[in-house]
Length: 379
Image (cartoon, rainbow, N blue to C red; front, side):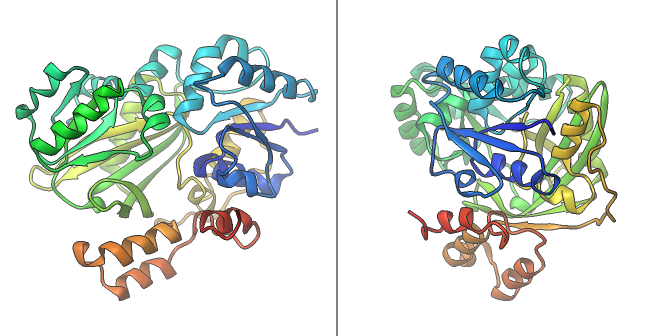
């Protein structure tokens, strides 16, 4: 029997990781506290609703151990969100007795989960970092005159931020807006970072993706944003793979110097005025466009599976392409409808970039229910 894969989080990232294992007959089990997430509607995943890891971590641990006992072979564990990364951080020693997984050391993982510590890791590497302030008190909030506006606001503690604030980030265009938002966050006991937004649209943003183990980068790729939602500062809804040696070198150096084993996704932004790349953020998990790697013969998730089992299961060479495009169709359409005049998006360019896409995110005719749920066709 093939070793099963346990994926923690059935949001898009975890669901896409599960789909990369669908054709190999590898049993995939998904665990999440939110039954509305798309993975619950996929025919490729056996799903379980579990307690929220920040509220009942011990019960979540017990459920995973109970399920693990059903298998003779050791399951592989993948955390697909910061909430579940923090859970593994807390229960790592016990989980290592019953599961196979590869993550940075807890010392490094603690810094990656913490947004301000991430920036310190980048600064130690000698990277350029946009100016920022870490704000934990009203006194620190009053020092915001040191910032250059507009700024993006991110939670220091990512799991805490995601549990309370639904948006990935918040943009403050001026001092008064930051003061208002900052007071509200501090009243909720949320420490945050206010960071300068570099000039230039999202096409200046590049993400370095890696699978790193035993001192070597086993797989790597670079993505470039084409459009994002919201346009000022958000997540990529139209993204393409590119060849960018500068970003590849910076990303590989960051991963190696900090020992970020397993999956990682590190974002940089090009400042056209200086010609320099600036570190934005990093994640020690699978990322949203990970399915593109299969089209380039780089199935990161299958490589991870093979690595942990010391096997070469179903590793088939594929002709690599330099450019592949990923589109989150509902969100990208929303960008076109709401913001096309603001960002100067012509109808022809929107249609061309969409028609040239290789992957449409949740939209897959072979597994359509997750997409139908996302657009409200399934209650």
